[in-house]
Amino acid sequence: MSRSEEFALVSHVALLGDGEAFGVLVEAYRSPVLRFLLHLCGDEELSKDLAQEAFLKAWLNIRSFRAAAKFSTWLFRIAYNAFYDYARAQKLSIGLGSVAFLPEAAAPNIDGSIDFTRSMSILKGDERSAMLLFYMEDFSVKKIAQVMRCPAGTVKSLLFRGKEKLSVYFKNSGYDR
Image (cartoon, rainbow, N blue to C red; front, side, top):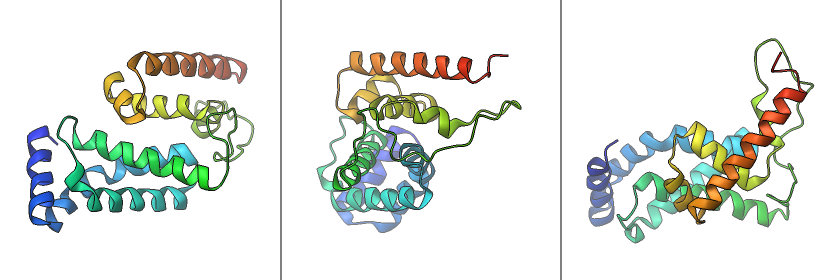
C-alpha cells in the first residue's frame, strides 16, 4: 500500500470515524502483524490476542498518529509494545537471555528444512525483534529504529549479533553440511 493510500485511509478514519477505511488497513496489515507477533511469542493464540489488542489500540488512538512515519511503522510499534506489555505483566524476562515464549523444539531436522522457531529462540528479545522486522517484514534499519525506539546503530548491532548467533547455531546443528 502506498503512503498516499495509507494517508487517505487514516484521514478517513481519524476525521470521519470510517470503519470501512480502518477495515482496509486491518486487511492490509493483519498477516504481517500476526506473523511478527507469532515469531516473537511462539504461541498462535497469544499472537492473535496481541494483534487484536494492537488493532484496537490503533483504532482508539488513530487521531494521535502523526504522518512523520508510515502507518505500518506506527502499527508495528503498537504491536511491539503490546507484546512487551504482556511480557512485563507476566513478569517474564525478555531480552535478558530468556526464551520463555518460544516453545522447546525437538532436535534439529537436517533434511533440508530449518527449524525456524528453534533457531530464533537462541536470540535475545531485541535481537529477535530486529531480525524479524528486517528479514521477515523487509523493514529498513531506519524503520526498525522507529519501531523499536532506538538508534539506527543499535539496530545494526542487533542485526549483526543476531546473524552471528544464527550462523554459529546453524553450523553447530549441521545445516552447513
